[in-house]
Image (cartoon, rainbow, N blue to C red):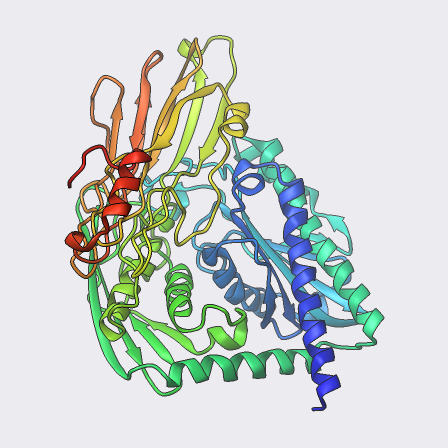
Length: 539
């Protein structure tokens, strides 16, 4: 390929990334749920006609992006090519064919140019409600967790399936928000389709085959080069999480070969009877993310780079099978990167950050008037983050969502959605593990219903009994606490009640420290004290 031809291909590759980024921005601008609009809990991407991911938007979470990379193949396997038409949009929330739980909606739309199928556009987003028990770990099977939508058509030839819309409205607590998000997802793909077709016509492409070969070849070769430079062998790690009512042990063995990496979850605890199980598609998504963060962080994420990372596992909590309850699959799934990185730290000593809070401290609030009287009812979802682990040369980031990467919802946006008040939201002093480099701080939130209201909440918290571990001599982060303002301790998982007049206090966990605390510089400690990150002069 000549230099000019290669430059032209690179420009078109960049154009594809612009297409999917505009696709994601459309979803952000039009979404109804705050989890999408404010926090960016979504993904979008463009795929070739065989359903292989060519490019993803920068906006989005690894759990959505990497599951979407496999989900599109599920759609192409179930919907025959002869039944695909211009103007179609397909949908599912099947946890084992989508993103791991019912609250995530995946939509896929075929893209036609001059009557020929040239691509697929796909997107995912977390909606505020899917009926059932609500967003929580209390279900005993997926059938209790909400409405299940098999792979089907949301729209055919541009005409929306209104029967599906009516079924949705009859099964969810916030029908306007949920249905609005469905239309936002469809619009997201439509914008992507228009921009893609415009680009292809502008540059004279009849198909994406040549561009796909260029993208996949360059990505594959670059990732393979990084893998070949790694030490070869197998390294294992164990990590214990709080679980629901008993601790859960996670085990991973990372094997580095000449041309691929594999993560095996053998030895991990069996499936739980509570809704914290993780379908394999989600465990794989975060295992691959952890590998890519270390091996090839700057190489674009697509089908070719992901193909070099494989995951194997017997049936267990990280490879849960239907009909296991999976509503809170993210709580355990977000621990997978720390689990995998712990194994990689043995292969690459001195290069891997310490453990962090990992799982988001999501809280779903169901607010209502006291005694069922007059007043506002609402379902409110908040995303909150603890501290990241310290890095080999830097302190950990405070109140930062790693590995999910979602944003924290602004207090004003959260209060607007329902009758609640956030009385306090601040960094939690002394929560980061001590070390040469300090772990990131958690945060403290204080939440109450407005006058005349009370609320139930679904706790989705971890690192309460098993804090983030430090690395290379660094101290562990401080565990989280869930309590009422009168000191009464609450459970870290499950639906619970907060009476009118009481406040719920969440003290989020901090990240682990890195390196011997005795090596921390005097200037760094002085700065910690001046900023209020620590409350005493020595730890």
